Length: 233
Ligand SMILES: C[S@@+](CC[C@H](N)C(=O)[O-])C[C@H]1O[C@@H](n2cnc3c(N)ncnc32)[C@H](O)[C@@H]1O
Image (cartoon, rainbow, N blue to C red; front, side):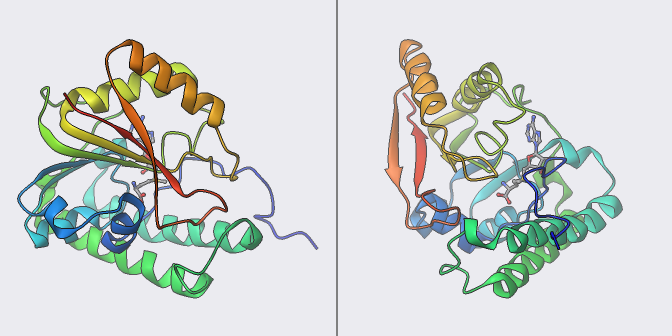
């Protein structure tokens, strides 16, 4: 019998809860990249990156349209979405490399721990979580030293078109005085979007924004071991 999640239809944008350890691996981060730096996480989702990196001494703002909801709704959403995400990954076991996590149960445990930290930080530091929606962010030019964008662009290329991607990349570059790092360059089914990536890099280059592709140590979807970096001035 087919598993109920054994389909390519994920539904609504997943509100996932990645940990600082995952962000470190995904974006190749050291403490020096974080401590004392102004950082934007867009979209923040229910990730604990903001909470954990702030504890290290980073000055982090997370932004996501879901932050317009009440803290109570967000806390329960973080838990239910973590289960939806883990169920999805488990149902599509063969699409992923599990070695970084150890297996589906460890993956679920890491994400639940991150969702818990997110929920606590939301109460303790609501000012870190700003409701906003790409491709328009409520920040001045060059407000951040580093901008991270994980699991929105390319991940949802099934519903976000090339114009949305370009406008969003330009907006992320506008608010960053340094680098913008994006991951992954595959969608939620694991399809690679090399043509879209190269189209966007050319459009950006024509507008004076240089980019590079860099290998990451992290690979969850098979072959998703590359991040896109936009360089500041
Ligand atoms: C898969 S989560 C990624 C969260 C986090 N970066 C992580 O890796 O755990 C995708 C997030 O994108 C958010 N989102 C959807 N549309 C958006 C938009 N136009 N601008 C910014 N965030 C958006 C969703 O609300 C959701 O929380």
